[in-house]
Image (tube, rainbow, N blue to C red; front, side, top):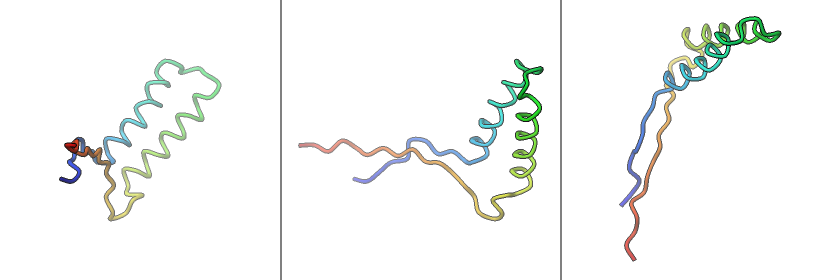
Length: 71
């Protein structure tokens, strides 16, 4: 018996989660000395992601499990 998919996720969920961390930080630290740089980095990343920096290739994540072997 081979591997079984436990979790399959498209890169969009990963990218959203990555940017959500920065956006949540910005909400709680709007006046932090690094806020402007974090905001610019998030905006740049989002712009590139939403306008296809991966071109025609998709990107996904799979978590695989392997059945326990008897014996």
